[in-house]
Length: 118
Length: 176
Image 1: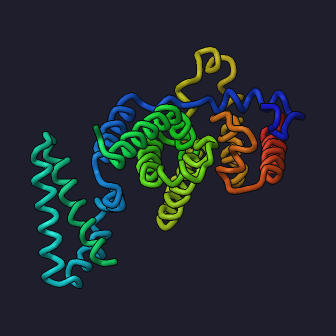
Image 2: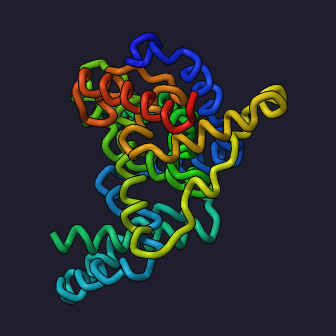
Protein backbone atom coordinates (compact mmCIF):
# COMPACT_ATOMS: atom_id res chain seq x y z
CA UNK A 1 0.00 0.00 0.00
CA UNK A 2 2.66 2.45 -0.92
CA UNK A 3 0.27 4.72 -2.80
CA UNK A 4 -1.56 5.88 0.27
CA UNK A 5 -0.39 9.39 -0.16
CA UNK A 6 0.58 8.90 3.43
CA UNK A 7 4.09 7.62 3.27
CA UNK A 8 5.21 10.33 5.68
CA UNK A 9 3.29 8.70 8.51
CA UNK A 10 4.49 5.10 8.67
CA UNK A 11 3.83 4.65 12.38
CA UNK A 12 0.32 5.94 12.10
CA UNK A 13 -0.27 3.70 9.09
CA UNK A 14 0.83 0.69 11.09
CA UNK A 15 -1.49 1.63 13.92
CA UNK A 16 -4.33 2.23 11.49
CA UNK A 17 -3.82 -1.18 9.94
CA UNK A 18 -4.08 -2.77 13.38
CA UNK A 19 -7.00 -0.63 14.55
CA UNK A 20 -8.97 -1.23 11.36
CA UNK A 21 -8.30 -4.94 11.12
CA UNK A 22 -10.72 -6.81 8.82
CA UNK A 23 -13.81 -8.17 10.55
CA UNK A 24 -14.93 -11.72 9.90
CA UNK A 25 -18.68 -11.90 9.35
CA UNK A 26 -20.57 -14.11 11.81
CA UNK A 27 -20.99 -17.68 10.55
CA UNK A 28 -24.75 -17.51 10.82
CA UNK A 29 -24.81 -14.40 8.62
CA UNK A 30 -22.93 -16.30 5.95
CA UNK A 31 -25.45 -19.15 6.14
CA UNK A 32 -28.48 -16.87 6.11
CA UNK A 33 -27.19 -14.73 3.29
CA UNK A 34 -26.27 -17.72 1.17
CA UNK A 35 -29.73 -19.19 1.73
CA UNK A 36 -31.37 -15.91 0.77
CA UNK A 37 -29.23 -15.51 -2.32
CA UNK A 38 -30.05 -19.08 -3.27
CA UNK A 39 -33.73 -18.18 -3.05
CA UNK A 40 -33.49 -15.04 -5.15
CA UNK A 41 -31.46 -16.69 -7.85
CA UNK A 42 -34.55 -18.79 -8.43
CA UNK A 43 -36.64 -15.72 -9.11
CA UNK A 44 -36.96 -14.04 -12.45
CA UNK A 45 -34.97 -10.83 -12.72
CA UNK A 46 -38.05 -8.67 -13.15
CA UNK A 47 -39.35 -9.78 -9.79
CA UNK A 48 -36.31 -8.54 -7.96
CA UNK A 49 -37.54 -4.99 -7.69
CA UNK A 50 -39.90 -6.22 -5.06
CA UNK A 51 -37.08 -7.79 -3.12
CA UNK A 52 -36.67 -4.94 -0.68
CA UNK A 53 -37.34 -6.80 2.49
CA UNK A 54 -36.92 -3.94 4.86
CA UNK A 55 -39.23 -1.76 2.81
CA UNK A 56 -41.71 -4.57 2.34
CA UNK A 57 -41.86 -5.35 6.03
CA UNK A 58 -42.63 -1.75 6.83
CA UNK A 59 -46.40 -1.29 6.58
CA UNK A 60 -45.88 2.37 5.63
CA UNK A 61 -44.52 1.18 2.31
CA UNK A 62 -47.52 -0.96 1.52
CA UNK A 63 -49.64 2.00 0.49
CA UNK A 64 -48.23 2.55 -2.98
CA UNK A 65 -48.50 -1.01 -4.32
CA UNK A 66 -51.86 -1.40 -2.64
CA UNK A 67 -53.02 1.84 -4.26
CA UNK A 68 -51.77 0.58 -7.59
CA UNK A 69 -54.05 -2.41 -7.32
CA UNK A 70 -57.00 -0.13 -6.62
CA UNK A 71 -56.14 2.20 -9.48
CA UNK A 72 -55.67 -0.75 -11.78
CA UNK A 73 -59.25 -1.69 -11.15
CA UNK A 74 -60.85 -5.09 -11.03
CA UNK A 75 -59.11 -6.39 -14.15
CA UNK A 76 -55.74 -5.44 -12.78
CA UNK A 77 -56.47 -6.96 -9.41
CA UNK A 78 -57.63 -10.15 -11.09
CA UNK A 79 -54.41 -10.27 -13.05
CA UNK A 80 -52.44 -9.89 -9.85
CA UNK A 81 -54.32 -12.76 -8.27
CA UNK A 82 -54.00 -14.96 -11.35
CA UNK A 83 -50.28 -14.43 -11.64
CA UNK A 84 -49.78 -14.86 -7.94
CA UNK A 85 -51.76 -18.11 -8.06
CA UNK A 86 -49.72 -19.30 -10.98
CA UNK A 87 -46.54 -18.70 -9.04
CA UNK A 88 -48.05 -20.17 -5.89
CA UNK A 89 -48.69 -23.38 -7.81
CA UNK A 90 -45.07 -23.45 -8.89
CA UNK A 91 -44.01 -22.68 -5.37
CA UNK A 92 -45.96 -25.60 -3.95
CA UNK A 93 -43.69 -27.87 -5.89
CA UNK A 94 -40.76 -26.63 -3.81
CA UNK A 95 -40.43 -27.35 -0.08
CA UNK A 96 -40.23 -24.19 2.05
CA UNK A 97 -41.00 -22.80 5.47
CA UNK A 98 -44.20 -21.02 6.35
CA UNK A 99 -42.53 -17.66 6.81
CA UNK A 100 -40.68 -17.94 3.51
CA UNK A 101 -43.88 -18.84 1.71
CA UNK A 102 -45.77 -15.92 3.20
CA UNK A 103 -42.95 -13.57 2.37
CA UNK A 104 -42.81 -14.78 -1.20
CA UNK A 105 -46.56 -14.50 -1.66
CA UNK A 106 -46.54 -10.93 -0.36
CA UNK A 107 -43.63 -10.08 -2.60
CA UNK A 108 -45.35 -11.49 -5.64
CA UNK A 109 -48.48 -9.49 -5.08
CA UNK A 110 -46.41 -6.30 -4.69
CA UNK A 111 -44.42 -7.16 -7.75
CA UNK A 112 -47.52 -7.53 -9.87
CA UNK A 113 -49.01 -4.38 -8.43
CA UNK A 114 -45.89 -2.43 -9.31
CA UNK A 115 -45.87 -3.87 -12.80
CA UNK A 116 -49.43 -2.74 -13.32
CA UNK A 117 -48.73 0.67 -11.88
CA UNK A 118 -46.11 1.39 -14.58
CA UNK B 1 -28.95 -29.36 -22.95
CA UNK B 2 -30.03 -26.06 -21.37
CA UNK B 3 -31.21 -23.25 -23.66
CA UNK B 4 -29.11 -20.08 -23.98
CA UNK B 5 -30.91 -17.83 -21.43
CA UNK B 6 -30.86 -20.62 -18.84
CA UNK B 7 -27.18 -21.21 -19.42
CA UNK B 8 -26.50 -17.46 -19.18
CA UNK B 9 -28.38 -17.21 -15.91
CA UNK B 10 -26.55 -20.23 -14.51
CA UNK B 11 -23.24 -18.65 -15.47
CA UNK B 12 -24.28 -15.33 -13.98
CA UNK B 13 -25.37 -16.96 -10.75
CA UNK B 14 -22.14 -18.89 -10.54
CA UNK B 15 -20.09 -15.76 -11.05
CA UNK B 16 -22.13 -13.83 -8.54
CA UNK B 17 -21.54 -16.59 -5.99
CA UNK B 18 -17.81 -16.26 -6.60
CA UNK B 19 -18.03 -12.49 -6.14
CA UNK B 20 -20.01 -12.93 -2.96
CA UNK B 21 -17.58 -15.44 -1.47
CA UNK B 22 -14.56 -13.36 -2.44
CA UNK B 23 -15.86 -10.13 -0.95
CA UNK B 24 -18.21 -10.97 1.88
CA UNK B 25 -15.54 -10.10 4.44
CA UNK B 26 -14.76 -6.83 2.66
CA UNK B 27 -18.38 -5.75 2.60
CA UNK B 28 -18.91 -6.82 6.19
CA UNK B 29 -15.74 -5.07 7.40
CA UNK B 30 -16.67 -1.88 5.57
CA UNK B 31 -20.21 -2.06 6.95
CA UNK B 32 -19.04 -2.69 10.48
CA UNK B 33 -16.60 0.20 10.57
CA UNK B 34 -19.15 2.41 8.88
CA UNK B 35 -22.08 1.74 11.20
CA UNK B 36 -20.25 0.67 14.35
CA UNK B 37 -22.23 -2.37 15.41
CA UNK B 38 -22.74 -5.94 14.23
CA UNK B 39 -26.52 -5.77 13.94
CA UNK B 40 -26.56 -2.93 11.44
CA UNK B 41 -23.46 -4.28 9.73
CA UNK B 42 -25.26 -7.57 9.06
CA UNK B 43 -28.27 -5.74 7.69
CA UNK B 44 -26.14 -3.49 5.51
CA UNK B 45 -24.16 -6.45 4.20
CA UNK B 46 -27.30 -8.36 3.34
CA UNK B 47 -28.89 -5.42 1.57
CA UNK B 48 -25.68 -4.73 -0.32
CA UNK B 49 -25.53 -8.21 -1.81
CA UNK B 50 -29.23 -8.28 -2.59
CA UNK B 51 -28.91 -5.02 -4.46
CA UNK B 52 -25.71 -6.15 -6.13
CA UNK B 53 -27.49 -9.22 -7.44
CA UNK B 54 -30.16 -7.03 -9.02
CA UNK B 55 -27.62 -5.11 -11.04
CA UNK B 56 -24.88 -7.69 -11.38
CA UNK B 57 -25.33 -8.39 -15.07
CA UNK B 58 -25.09 -4.73 -16.05
CA UNK B 59 -22.18 -4.09 -13.71
CA UNK B 60 -20.30 -7.00 -15.23
CA UNK B 61 -21.04 -5.77 -18.73
CA UNK B 62 -19.88 -2.24 -17.94
CA UNK B 63 -16.84 -3.16 -15.87
CA UNK B 64 -14.84 -4.23 -18.93
CA UNK B 65 -13.04 -6.80 -16.84
CA UNK B 66 -12.13 -4.46 -13.99
CA UNK B 67 -12.57 -5.78 -10.43
CA UNK B 68 -16.06 -5.36 -9.03
CA UNK B 69 -15.06 -4.76 -5.43
CA UNK B 70 -15.25 -0.95 -5.73
CA UNK B 71 -18.74 -1.30 -7.18
CA UNK B 72 -19.80 -3.48 -4.24
CA UNK B 73 -18.36 -1.07 -1.71
CA UNK B 74 -20.05 1.83 -3.48
CA UNK B 75 -23.39 0.07 -3.05
CA UNK B 76 -22.68 -0.39 0.66
CA UNK B 77 -21.59 3.24 0.87
CA UNK B 78 -24.84 4.47 -0.69
CA UNK B 79 -26.99 2.20 1.46
CA UNK B 80 -25.17 3.36 4.59
CA UNK B 81 -25.76 6.97 3.59
CA UNK B 82 -29.46 6.20 3.20
CA UNK B 83 -29.49 4.52 6.58
CA UNK B 84 -28.01 7.61 8.22
CA UNK B 85 -30.33 9.93 6.34
CA UNK B 86 -33.35 7.97 7.54
CA UNK B 87 -32.08 7.84 11.09
CA UNK B 88 -31.17 11.50 11.23
CA UNK B 89 -34.86 12.20 11.59
CA UNK B 90 -34.86 10.61 15.02
CA UNK B 91 -32.31 10.94 17.84
CA UNK B 92 -29.65 8.22 18.01
CA UNK B 93 -26.64 7.56 20.17
CA UNK B 94 -23.43 8.50 18.41
CA UNK B 95 -21.79 5.68 16.52
CA UNK B 96 -18.46 6.13 18.18
CA UNK B 97 -20.17 5.59 21.54
CA UNK B 98 -20.86 2.00 20.57
CA UNK B 99 -17.79 1.26 18.47
CA UNK B 100 -16.01 -1.63 20.15
CA UNK B 101 -12.58 -2.90 19.24
CA UNK B 102 -12.88 -5.46 16.47
CA UNK B 103 -13.10 -9.04 17.66
CA UNK B 104 -10.32 -10.09 15.32
CA UNK B 105 -7.66 -8.35 17.36
CA UNK B 106 -5.19 -10.66 19.04
CA UNK B 107 -4.58 -11.00 22.73
CA UNK B 108 -1.26 -9.27 22.21
CA UNK B 109 -3.01 -6.31 20.68
CA UNK B 110 -5.44 -6.14 23.54
CA UNK B 111 -2.79 -6.33 26.22
CA UNK B 112 -0.15 -4.10 24.71
CA UNK B 113 -1.98 -1.64 22.56
CA UNK B 114 -5.61 -1.55 23.42
CA UNK B 115 -5.61 2.03 24.58
CA UNK B 116 -3.59 3.15 21.61
CA UNK B 117 -5.84 1.35 19.11
CA UNK B 118 -8.93 2.68 20.82
CA UNK B 119 -7.49 6.17 20.53
CA UNK B 120 -6.87 5.64 16.82
CA UNK B 121 -10.40 4.33 16.27
CA UNK B 122 -11.82 7.22 18.21
CA UNK B 123 -9.81 9.58 16.05
CA UNK B 124 -11.05 7.91 12.87
CA UNK B 125 -14.61 8.42 14.04
CA UNK B 126 -13.97 12.13 14.43
CA UNK B 127 -12.93 12.56 10.82
CA UNK B 128 -15.33 13.93 8.20
CA UNK B 129 -17.29 11.17 6.47
CA UNK B 130 -15.32 11.07 3.23
CA UNK B 131 -11.97 10.97 4.98
CA UNK B 132 -13.14 8.28 7.40
CA UNK B 133 -14.49 6.16 4.55
CA UNK B 134 -11.28 6.47 2.58
CA UNK B 135 -9.27 5.25 5.57
CA UNK B 136 -11.63 2.33 6.14
CA UNK B 137 -11.29 1.30 2.50
CA UNK B 138 -7.53 1.67 2.58
CA UNK B 139 -6.69 0.05 5.89
CA UNK B 140 -9.56 -2.34 6.64
CA UNK B 141 -10.06 -3.54 3.07
CA UNK B 142 -6.60 -2.93 1.64
CA UNK B 143 -7.95 -1.11 -1.40
CA UNK B 144 -5.52 0.90 -3.52
CA UNK B 145 -6.11 4.49 -4.63
CA UNK B 146 -7.73 3.50 -7.91
CA UNK B 147 -10.22 1.19 -6.22
CA UNK B 148 -11.07 3.78 -3.59
CA UNK B 149 -11.49 6.41 -6.29
CA UNK B 150 -13.98 4.19 -8.11
CA UNK B 151 -15.86 3.39 -4.90
CA UNK B 152 -16.15 7.06 -3.97
CA UNK B 153 -16.73 8.35 -7.49
CA UNK B 154 -13.61 10.54 -7.45
CA UNK B 155 -10.48 10.84 -9.54
CA UNK B 156 -7.33 9.00 -8.55
CA UNK B 157 -5.62 12.31 -7.81
CA UNK B 158 -8.43 13.59 -5.64
CA UNK B 159 -8.43 10.31 -3.76
CA UNK B 160 -4.72 10.49 -3.08
CA UNK B 161 -5.17 13.98 -1.66
CA UNK B 162 -8.18 12.85 0.37
CA UNK B 163 -6.24 10.05 2.03
CA UNK B 164 -3.23 12.22 2.67
CA UNK B 165 -5.40 14.83 4.36
CA UNK B 166 -7.26 12.18 6.33
CA UNK B 167 -4.06 10.81 7.78
CA UNK B 168 -2.69 14.26 8.49
CA UNK B 169 -5.90 15.22 10.30
CA UNK B 170 -5.92 11.96 12.21
CA UNK B 171 -2.36 12.59 13.25
CA UNK B 172 -3.38 15.95 14.66
CA UNK B 173 -6.31 14.41 16.49
CA UNK B 174 -4.40 11.60 18.14
CA UNK B 175 -1.17 13.58 18.53
CA UNK B 176 1.07 10.86 17.08
